[in-house]
Length: 217
Ligand code: G16
Ligand code: MG
Image 1 (tube, rainbow, N blue to C red):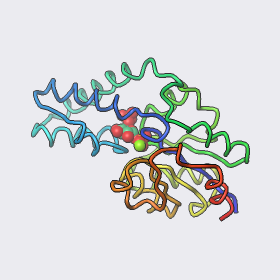
Image 2 (cartoon, rainbow, N blue to C red):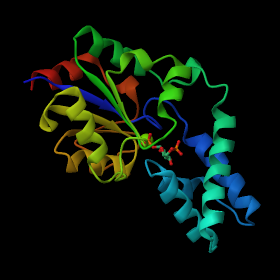
Image 3 (spheres, rainbow, N blue to C red):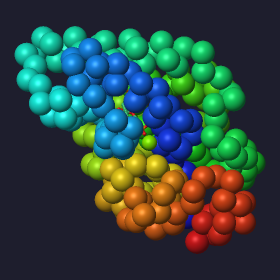
Image 4 (cartoon, helix red, strand yellow):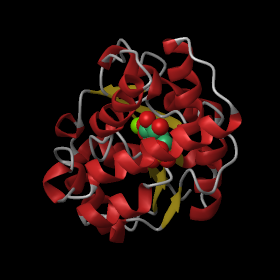
């Protein structure tokens, strides 16, 4: 039974959460309220539209349809400015080691991200060539915790969902992987990601023997 590996982007491959945070904070401040890093946790793995809805709830602000659309665009323009100069130095530790090991073992690899900016980011950091397919905010209609993004990735890899392994840093993403009947591996705080089947602080804690075991299961 052929295996497939699916990686989330933000918080797993690169730490773009800090740039998303800066862009949302700028918008919040323009609208006259504060937005904390703690509140930003709720935004991880969540679609841009849903993020703005939550932000407006936090600030107790109403928006017309027109304002809503404008603010989504404003946030993304700022975000793109923050990530403009991203390069390989922003890849999280030991991510290339795992990707390389999977490639050497001919394991198909997918990206499963909520972000509409996923492909240009992978290009900037020089990891695009590892991915056999990219499923992101441009291809899915239902956001995590809905399993759509991961099920579509499995389909495109031509691997059964139960033979897929997902790396995720967000609660919504771990829930999505579990709902897809995949092996969920939480990257980050195990108290936050308690629903994950396995948990590691980051990829430096994952050795290739562990990956081999997953491949042989
Ligand atoms: C990411 C981030 C979210 C962000 C979403 C949409 O998801 O974690 O904070 O809101 O993408 O991003 P964009 O505005 O670039 O389309 P993931 O699934 O990669 O962690
Ligand atoms: Mg993420």
